[in-house]
Image 1 (cartoon, rainbow over the protein chains, first blue to last red):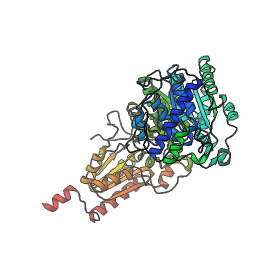
Image 2: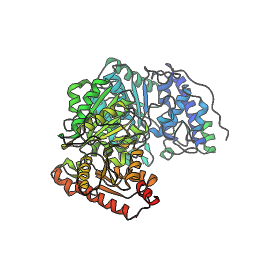
Image 3: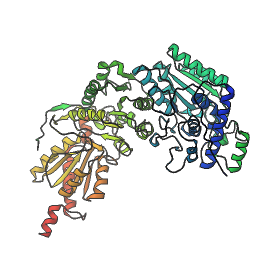
Image 4: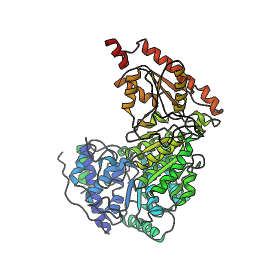
Length: 290
Length: 335
């Protein structure tokens, strides 16, 4: 199968839902290309969260400079669900952090696009290694503490966890501390696709009700359709407003998503949590993601 | 060679706590995370002096370790301290991934190390963490021998870049190093010269080695006593030189005999200068309640075991059970 990556990239600015939909489709196409080349990796979560990533990196939500990834004033994103990194890599490439052609190296020997993010490989925009679930959110809390409590800066920190990841007890240690320290500069995104490798969340280990747990832990909690850009942007706007108003509470966005979104045979099917498409499946997926 | 005499008795945790205040004065990026037992591990000293740079995380060691990584990735120099059982092993994966794989500049102080914790018993007497931590890439692992060395080591780890761990204890231990005693990360140093057997130790057992050396001298055996506070990076040269010049080694530590300082010495010796080696430490068992002194006797962590082990190592060497001989023996044979 001949796989080519385009050389387009997108500026980070306020965009219409239609524009964001087009960007998210490009991200999904790249994810399918990366995974068919890698012959291993996670399809479901990355496709399911592509809309959120498009908004974060190219919809003007996060402040970043693609040519100066260590810019002091940047907002930071920590992918706590490290296995979902194909969507972060594809998003960052589309945002211009590195050439899209490099996406073809996912999971390959000596790649900067490790199977789970490795900070040691020096991929621009990767703030931290992750992949052992439940840790990224604590790192993000530490970053938000540094920004708000020590540096008194207006930087913001975003972290995305999966919903299966909520089964890790340390996630709730992190949540407890984010509220304890009044981190209104911290935005916790929960990708609630209701699937994990072994099946439905409530069958493997029930974590519901997620929104009520977040509220009880002291978060300003917003439940959204994670594929509706009006709702996605509305939630991020609310977080930024909360931060500017100094409400003294962190924000949790519970994004209801479908694993494998955009590819008919993958959608809402936990069998696609940790598998790549074969060539035929990739052709079909790319056909659907036109 | 400096003579080491007993200057007093003080817990190593005091050195740790006092050093944090020194570091806090020198570097405004130094911050400290508390895990509820701040008085016990002496982070309370920093909390009193720099309340705006102290954060209480509660009884949540996994979170504290990972928050520390986030602070470190933001340019801070975070110290987190608790009991070693909880801040080296309960949070083992957080240290591995968030601190070491990230090469995050996180500093961890692990108190209540060894059985000298005393009455609290086995759950709180960590005896395994040296074995774990020294296998982690990028980690620096220090085990100071007395109060003053704990203070120097803490300052040194606060001024280096990279993840680091320091092990310290609860109970008072002999104080005998001085401001003049050298300390450098990556270096072991010879406290007493001798060429008949090398006694290599860390932590509270270094003093016991000095006592054992005194007793051995009464039998005409001159023991070289080496304090090895830097488990990682490890001083290969001093260890190999001791093996070549003494031909017999005893290691001593308040830790399992498996995988700790003894394991590190054995790895180096096996590769570079195989000589007989005997291990003094806790022999594959958990600790228990009691007074520190009686526990040290019960678990065989006094000069007497070091003394007996030295005689055994010398005997093995002289029986030629291992092919490697001291340089002077070889020269005598050739001569």
